[in-house]
Image (cartoon, rainbow, N blue to C red; front, side, top):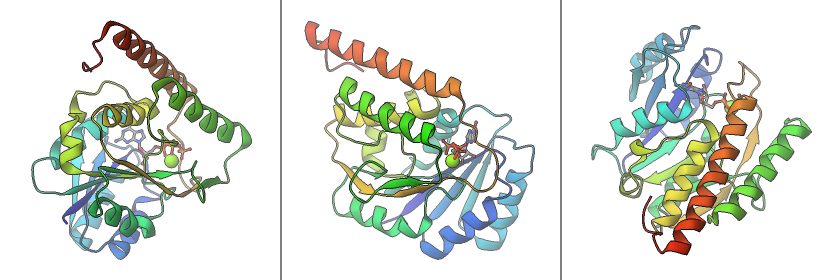
Length: 245
Ligand SMILES: Nc1nc2c(ncn2[C@@H]2O[C@H](COP(=O)(O)OP(=O)(O)OP(=O)(O)O)[C@@H](O)[C@H]2O)c(=O)[nH]1
Ligand SMILES: [Mg+2]
């Protein structure tokens, strides 16, 4: 099956070299589409150079920083053109272990519509995260699951593999959220579409290089989206209009 990793980057110059080499080693036939938002630290130029050296790396250069959701919408639009059977999403900061790529690909080949690398199933977890971040992520996910009734324990994990046709079916380019809420929005749409969601355990390692782009604002935005979607779903169930987005 033909597969591609969509990789949003913003100021990941300390990670991009290690990351692309590790992906090439772990999954030699998987392509990579880097979506760089004109990183001031030159990540985009580094990715171009690495692409020339390694092959199978394409770089989408965007004019300015526009958020994770927006970067994925642009990247997905490019790779959902029939070239690929599997579309993978990853962070560039080595939090997601490239050595697990073959497992994600096998699970999609085995019938999953989406495979989520999950911190909240047996065998999964986080290392090096401060306690407040662990609690926020864990309880954010418990809240999301209970409010939206989605079939996943980790809705905010960005390490995923989608069957390309199943991703196209939920029209990811028409999503509106950014940050973590974007990832939740995709799980919500997949659940409503009747997709087979499979979670596989991952150990999420905190980044050792570069700065986090996730802010308090993004976390608050995520919880507000979840609350609004939950209310909307409830209202639609009451009025029998559940089939609408
Ligand atoms: N193109 C693009 N990529 C982004 C943007 N914001 C974040 N990213 C990338 O998205 C991925 C996830 O962002 P991170 O900052 O690592 O978010 P996080 O993993 O929740 O937080 P930390 O690991 O603590 O930094 C990384 O590869 C970032 O470089 C953006 O506005 N545009
Ligand atoms: Mg990260």
